[in-house]
Image (tube, rainbow, N blue to C red):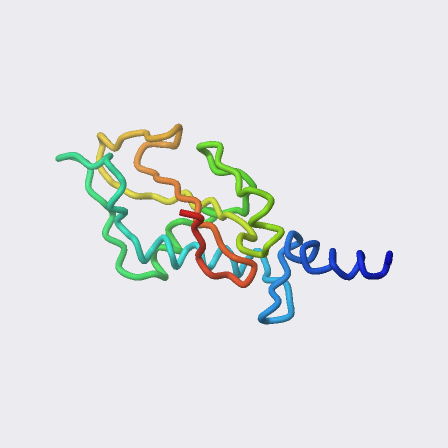
Length: 140
């Protein structure tokens, strides 16, 4: 009986730990960060950002590589988004959501760049959420 219970708990426990069953491995922090950078750059400039005005303009990054180069140390894995959102534990147990990556990046130029959500002027933050195998995931 105890062995059966242990077997039933193996998969949810591995899911919470972030195990990718499709690839039979754990993804590294660097892999999640790279995926978050790709996702952020693919939605650049963000349509949801309302800080632009006549003086401040979005930075025109020439390439993904330039975006990464000019935003060094932009990213870290987090359990909670800056707005207080946490992934419900049931999603982690089911393997639907492994981690969120906080990406803080330079968004606009100009002397009147606005400070938004407690960030330095001209910066934005996003929190892409990924499955254990590194696919973008949203519970919405």
